Length: 576
Ligand SMILES: [Zn+2]
Image (tube, rainbow, N blue to C red; front, side, top):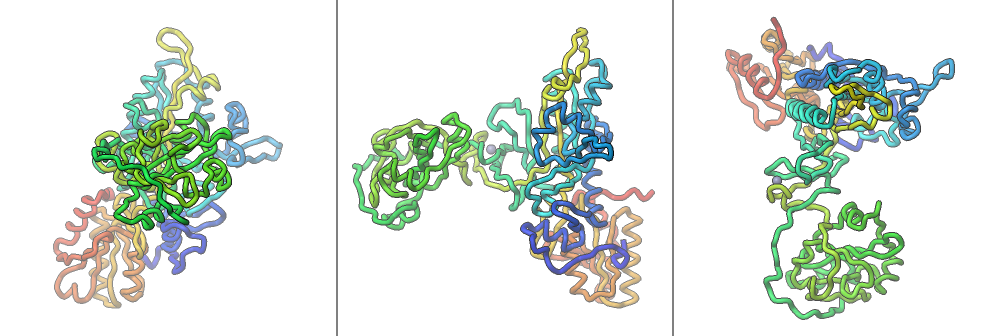
């Protein structure tokens, strides 16, 4: 492609409402434009990325035995009414009426339609298993469309549905699709983690998210540096390290006057003497069914409220107000502690290993020193704290790390939820009529464009992974020199003949402008051809994610670039 002919409307300023790099960069670099809240146009460069991503997805779906089909985006209301989702989907469903008053909606997902198709067309176990997928626009009236292509109201999605004779066969289909998803995300060049819904359980997982790691991800996840353990922070477990500090002798409990000292940080600087946060205890008071519950964690830990609610067998817990804390402990906020606490006490298991802790004394301006679990207080011991960086992996005990993730894919076994409700049955080999067992597999194709940019960007622009870059090589001829232009054109043609997808910046722009735009657009390899290089017979080759460039002789340039494209995960065009 010639830059002078390409439609790449870059802009200097980031959009005012841009909160994430992908939102800002995709608009600035001319990949997309917004036409309404959560509604976007993909311009040619954006479309090329989208096509590359969907090609990889289709390739792997086909390899996994799935067959592509296409359902309508506009769906008569009867199917969602039959499943109950016409009501339960609520305002997220885009509803519309035709000229006769007939009710329709725009498809947010298609379980009902596909279940209906199978209900009509599948009769016998001989027609199963069945695996169908589509790549189609989906519609959800998000309450807060945000962050550009990360959360849109119209977006391209790959959704696949599997149909099997029983749970075991469905699990097998699930396993095949899970492998296909792994290949897809690896081929896209994304750093991702598979987050199992019921992590920790040995096998038998029936749902998993494919989380693309990125600083601005909506989901907080923890993952192991050594093994494949990954989980949402809310449910993540930590290996309980037996780091008993209690080998030492317990000191005698003493009360210390700590005027105006509320937080753990204030306690530490007030008491001094090398006191560390892990030698203090944090006592949080919650109100559960109208009664106070104290949760005690180490000073460097946070209470995981999801875990606390599970321990207490309630839907959710509410942190007590300042007034309630005062009423319960008799002290102002910041001085609560487990000793002689009048109420239910839930203690994190890490607390049981703290020797001579500092805790609030349930008296304003008073703390205790040398408090020990077992001697000075008891309570129910559970895994209660939010997993933190450095906690042990529950599988292998190596360090866990915290990440933010963007959900790029979601796979799960649906079971017979829709098929039983909608009567999608088949006759098994014993002549018995049974509901088909379904699985459902989604990938947010549009979202992956943004997720890739979230993962790969710097101050100057985008750094596309080779496999999904709009162009593999960006040729930058420098200066208004006839020879340079001719040589650049020669390289451009030779690359095309070798199957490399190249963009040549043939604009009459200054070198500074060309370099700036090359960095902003983010093609993985830049080839610079200038007068000086021409004299020495070399071009400058620079990878977007490398600091340094290298000089490559024109004699070997095409071979060098072709090999580099392949090495970085790119595929050459079929030029035969
Ligand atoms: Zn591990």
